[in-house]
Image 1 (spheres, helix red, strand yellow):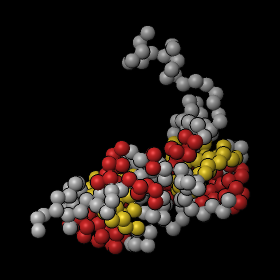
Image 2: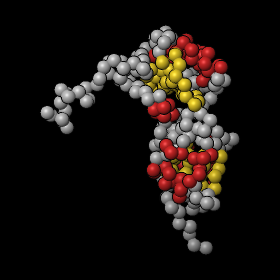
Image 3: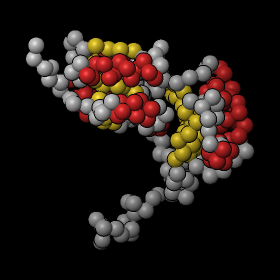
Image 4: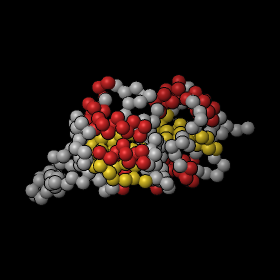
Length: 257
């Protein structure tokens, strides 16, 4: 038998966004279309993301597998001449645990590519037409999580981050909402707006705009324990002045007159 010619001589880790296939990047879509083997986080990615996969492609779910099992499959399929892609929800650089996978693959001399994706905080903010960086209110966005089983550096406690009074996007924190709300209320007014997103952009997903003082109560009522994001921001519904960017008197490289 002749040697199998794969379409891509590397394993691609692909960020597929929070759930809506229309939010896939063109590069992500191209990679999925040519893949022989698609290894996907089925607990976090809706199956419709795979609709563009070619006929006959092998689709492997990973929700019940551990690190060694996942990487062993990737290595086996790749060395068999298959084009292999690994799908992660959102953007792989955020809470994706890709580094440990990549290190194992690199030890096997396998070339890696990471394809970025849209994150849930961006989509949730867009649904509410929200800008998270308003002049003189905040120019900073913090992406973080509440401390839980995953170790948090002491210097990155929610209390320390909340002192900045900037826009905070809390991932993986629904189980810790009581403690998170208590901490945030030490630094933010109770009426601070919070965007809550559950399975953002899935068919059964939703977002809602609430106030910080109601974050715990709302989460309990909605029975939120996973796939939830909270965006706490003094910038939401707080437009006070225009930026300099489009001010006719503001001169810059492309507008000197």
